[in-house]
Length: 254
Image 1: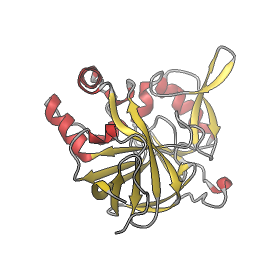
Image 2 (image 1 turned 30 degrees about the horizontal axis):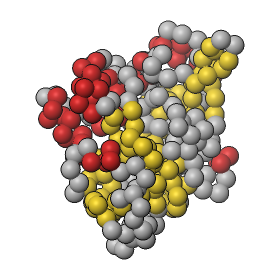
Image 3 (image 1 turned 60 degrees about the horizontal axis):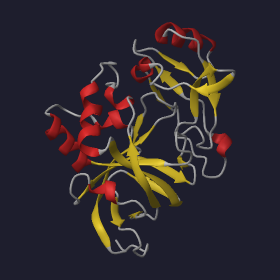
Image 4 (image 1 turned 180 degrees about the horizontal axis):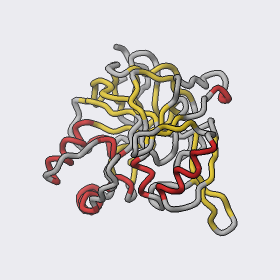
């Protein structure tokens, strides 16, 4: 592969419950549905007679909650193997998905009725069966531009890379590929257009509307790039990665 950028996996993230805080990973399996167990659970709401996933756009308090798995899900072979997530509330208490006390606790904290859904095949993503890739160069550049600390967790990436590319360069990589040393391959789809969710600070619920206004004014409201797995396997934090420009051959040598 003729690489346009090389580097390493700085961090990996999984979000067991859609629109809640997630967990940082040392390694994870990935397949055509993305990272194992990512967004396999969702709170739901009723809207015009339909049941839809509830997100932090409608209930910003969701971002003060965090979800994790009691053991690593691995649906590389069997999607039904994804375990029930554990939810950690802003009060420090934890409840397992399916605990009869969880609904009352969530409704009290969020101020609205909620339902529950589990879909372990990755279809609860806004873009089904995708992953989000971000770069440290762009995070640091955004922080410098706006003059305040920017926590990458605001953007809910799955793979955060430290590359020798310029800031924002990943927004030009549509149609390219990322190859990882252990064999995983991602196809880069298109830049991720951001909604209001990154303006809500994870954990505290503090709102920062200037962040989205800055992204809209300077970067077409984009941060990160969406990707699809074309070759599954195991991803490791610290693993070498190489990005190929659109139209280049996909074989990589590490």
